Structure formats: C-alpha cells, structure tokens
Amino acid sequence: MNHPSPSSTAQDPLKAADARRLILDGLSPVTGSERVELHAALGRVLAQDVIAPLDVPMHDNSAMDGYAVRAEDLRAGSETMLAVVGSALAGHPFAACLGAGEAVRIMTGAVIPDGADTVVMQEIVRREDDRIFIPAGQQKGRNLRRAGEDLAAGSVALAAGRRCGPAELGLIASLGIGEVVVRRRLRVAFFSTGDELASIGQPLAPGAIYDSNRHTLSGALARLGCELLDMGIVPDRPAALEAAFAEAAGTADVVITSGGVSVGDADFIRELMARMGEVSFWKLAIKPGRPMAFGRIGDAVLFGLPGNPVATMVSFYQFVQDALLSLMGVTPLPPAERFAVRADFALRKPAGRVEYLRGRLLRDGTEPGVTLAGAQGSGVLRSMSEADCLIVLPEDCTSVQAGDTVFIQPFHGLV
Ligand code: AMP
Ligand code: MG
Image (tube, rainbow, N blue to C red; front, top):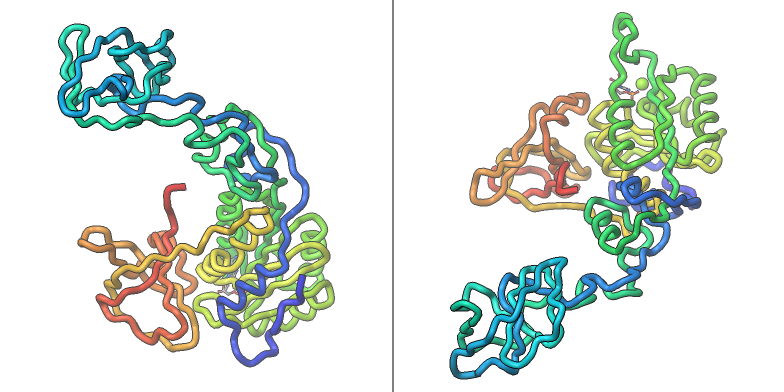
C-alpha cells in the first residue's frame, strides 16, 4: 500500500474525493476462496467466472401464446388458412415435424416445433374448429426466443468479481449450476473508544451514554456479508488501546474504530498508531465527519472513524464501504449513485467542504424532490433513521434555495 498522504500536519483539510482515491488505491482483495452451495452465495463475491454449460434458453421457444407456422405458407396479400395439427405447451413439445399448410397451437415457453419458423399471436388469429385464418402481413421469425439468446454455451455468464444478488442466484440456477466458488469472507474487527461509553445492560454512570456506533457498524458490516469481530468498548487509555489494536490487527483483515480521533484525542492515538503501523490522520473537508484516520497495522487495513454517531455512519458509507467491497474482491465497484432532485428546503453553507445532509425524498409531485429529515446535528441518529437518502452538497456550493437541483444518494434500492 502506498503510504497515505498528506497527513494531518498539512494545513488544508483533505478533499473527500482525494481521501476516497487515497483509500482505494493500493487495496488488493483478500486471497482465499471456498466453494459454497448456491443459496449460501447470496452477498458473496464470485472468485471465478461462471461459464454457461448450456445455451439459455436451450431451444428456440415461443414468446407468445399463439400458433407456430411456416412463414413460407403465409400469403403476402391475403388471409391464409392453415390446419391445426396439434399443440405445444411449455414442457410438452409437439413431437412431429410441421408440414406444408399446417399450424401448431403453441403456448409461451413451448419449444418451436421442427419445421416451424414463426409464431403468430393468438389475438389476431380467427379459429374455426381445426382451421385457423391468419391475416396478411406476418413477418417471418416473429415472436420467437432463440436458443442461446440469453446466454450462449461456453460464454461467461457472470465474471469473477461479481457480487451475487437475487438475480445472480437465479441466473446461476438457470444454468443448472448448484455450487459456486466465492472469495472468503472479509474479517472485520471493530470497537468503540471512549470512557463515557456503556454497553447495553450496563448501568449508566453520570455522564455516560450507551454505545450506538458498534451497532450501526455491525449492521452495515453484516449487510456487506463480512465476518464480524465485535471487540466491545475500549477506554481512552493508551495501554488498553494498544492491546486492542494489536489483537484486532492480528486477527482481522480490517479494523474499524470509532471515536478518539478528534483534535484533542488524536494526539495520543496518533502517537500510538504511528508506533504500531503506518497511519495517517486526516482532517477531511466534509461535514459531518471531519476527523478520520486511515492506514495499516501489520497486514490489517485500519479505519479510525469519528465518534459522533451520524459522522460514523456518513464516513463509513463515503469512505469505508467501497474499500471493503474492493477488499472483498468486487470488481468493478458499483458506481456511486447520485440522482438530481428538486430541493424543498433552503440553507446556506460555507464553501470548501462537502456536506452530507439527511434527506427524505418527496414522491408526490410531478418530479421527485427532497426535504431535510429533521435536525442535522452530527450526533442526532434519529434523523439518520428518518432519512431515506443523503443530500450531497459539493464543496463549491454556498447556498441552496427551494427549487434548486441537488444530488442525493438513496439509502435503499431494489437489491
Ligand atoms: P470523539 O470522536 O471520541 O471525540 O466523540 C465525539 C462524540 O461522539 C462524543 O459526544 C462522544 O460521546 C460520541 N461518541 C463517541 N463514540 C460513541 C459511540 N460509540 N456511541 C455513541 N456516541 C459516541
Ligand atoms: Mg471519545
């Protein structure tokens, strides 16, 4: 890995895009793979190409309910009468070969009988007993799905690096494949730092608060399919932190901490981490989530996220998630989703930093809009829960007026 620079000694805060690039450059995927049963591949990353062992579909088949015919039988200028000699249903092909002047009743998905080359949809056909009348003007080859049209035998159905979602499971199943080789899971150790933090079930001392970051992180990590190593809460003591970092870096591929990286705290943590590995502290030109550490201790990649609960989540999604996907072997990385919508709020902001606001999409107008989801303090988790998107205001933006176009990143999609 390149040593990430510049470090926090630089005066200017680092731009979000530069931080992302510094993080993503120089990460290489975990090695090691395992063969898993198809359903267990959900969320996993293919370690090998999946090659189609057969054509999909295997046979030319009908895309419509109608009649399979020979185009050469159809008259160009007038109606054609054909004799219906049988039927073909999905899973029940017509056994014989279609002769001159003959048609076969055919349903969607049924194999096109030998001799037939065209399907005429039933809606335009007039039937009288075992005879049909087809209007003029039919085109040869219509309403067929060709063998191999979806995937040709021998072709790459899914390339290594693809993360399996429901569509991929279905595609693999359609090839008759029941097991795939996937990268091993990424092992991620995480802990919260702070003398004020208590775990659920512990009594709250005066001034103490419950640790929420470990739970947002474990949720986000579990959704990515990581193997979780929850190391609990570590107090703000150098010896305890050193022991925790050493243990985490010795067992995990990635170590994620929250808290302790703000200006006052960072000094002693920086000293500690600098001794243990290669770590840079950054002041990022973003809000929320200004302080952040990134680097490596031993073989483990380290992310030191800010402690404020919303800042933890925002920096996780902006900087950590794609790094984890990259380490998991996902290639190419999914493009950053950004959609332009109409702002239904107004605010001012200083130039020079990216702001991530919690937003709620408005879907009732003619074009989608977005409004603010409650108070925007970086400790207000409720607004994160009530939001369904982040509104991303770029560095050069200094104000938003109602009606302006802003960019959002939606939280949920069809996944
Ligand atoms: P720090 O980055 O350690 O200075 O923390 C910034 C703010 O986030 C402080 O108000 C902390 O109490 C709060 N905080 C830090 N870690 C957590 C956590 N794990 N859960 C909830 N709040 C936290
Ligand atoms: Mg702290």
